[in-house]
Length: 425
Image 1: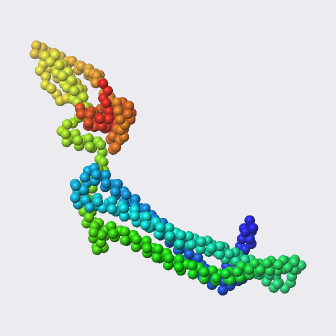
Image 2: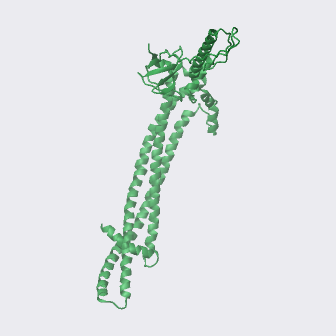
Image 3: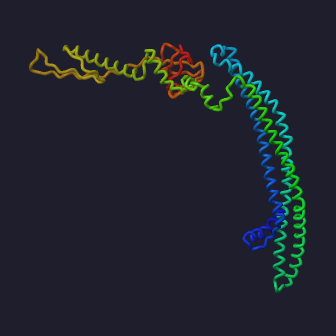
């Protein structure tokens, strides 16, 4: 709370000094020392950041390389032992054999460089952290000196205003005494911090320079040693196995890859799965068998009704004793054509009314159901999902249970594999 109160008291002076309405004191000698200290502080922060990033990056590189080699060994070793990969693909025999050697090299390099990384941490990172903490404490002292300078200028301006006032009242005389006391106190505190920093900063800057220079050189040679060990290990592995004279690494990779990408793209397992309904249609077309569809069933029922209508029309005409011809199929029964009796020429008999249309006979086809024995999730549009134990109404099915059937469940219609269900008896 005390610091907040002082900050409020200093705010008016800070604002007026920025716009030139208040006098602000400067110390050229201290400003020069502060500028040099700021440069040392920035260099310390940068070196701490760079050394930490380098240590962590090399550690992650070694861990990733070791894991990468272990993954390759796991990938190739079981395949080589089980399927004789080297025998089937002689061009890959060298690669399969080199995997184990590469794994050993990466693990050995990781163990060799671990002490080097620990040395970087103890000889570079930790000393930089200690120096950074010292710089933080010095920065706090500089900030405190700046606050005392503001108090000094603030009380100095107030004192000068009262002294320059020609006619002073009794309250001004009392206030002048208080302002003089505040000025003396602020002046003493400012001189203390200002003199302390002007005395100690040059000594610290000299020590920091003598500390950072050998630290920087040590870090340089530690980096060089890390690079040398990595190059030595990897080159010992690559000698006699790969052509190290070529520098176009990308072209070497493209040459060794060959048409691998085209072969993978040609595989069916990497392509997008088509709709199950389309697969079913293609399978039926290829096998030459077709199952009745809903449209075909409706057409069959329509044809049966037309046949019954034609049969009824023929029966009516035959009962009248006249020869009749069939008319095109129609859902309504037309009246037989009028005729003139041979024994009566004086009167024409009216044609009998058409018989009432026949009521459709109730269908005695019992619905067929199948019970799901496995869960099935729809994989494409048009599939029917169900759970084990659900009873599915069969709409279309074939004699082969290995094919896809059409069914209805909970109002949804779709296709599903017949092997996932068992037809109810």
